[in-house]
Length: 166
Image 1 (cartoon, rainbow, N blue to C red):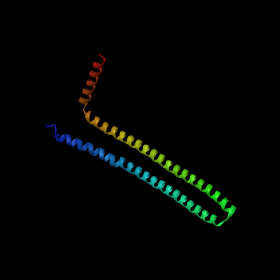
Image 2 (cartoon, rainbow, N blue to C red; image 1 turned 90 degrees about the horizontal axis):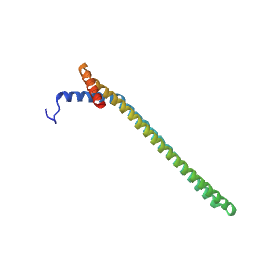
Image 3 (cartoon, rainbow, N blue to C red; image 1 turned 30 degrees about the vertical axis):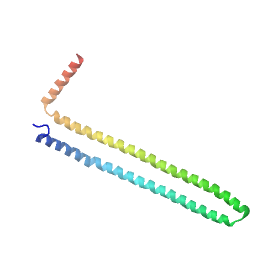
């Protein structure tokens, strides 16, 4: 028996174990994960679309402000001064509002992505833990399939408990 070449029995049981884990993952794990990733991609696409719409609104507002500037140049005297004051305040408010809305949308999208990522990671951890428990249970059942092995394990545990007390 070489340390680098496993025996055929070991290879067989490793192949069986791998097949079981692969089947369970393919049947229940991967579809859930890919579904969540697809939902996340859809959410990101919707967020990008919303941000583009906000940018288009900002551009439209900017274009409207340019038209207001052009029309104000045609007027004279007091009307020109009032229009310039009105234009400046509206432009400032629109910029502030657009910047605040864009910043809020971006921040909301980032927060949502972070929360989704954390939820996804937690779900994956829970699923991996569940699969690990199932695999461990099957391995332990295989290890303790005979009554003699169970008795040997109990005797060994009693010996260890006795030696720890004394």
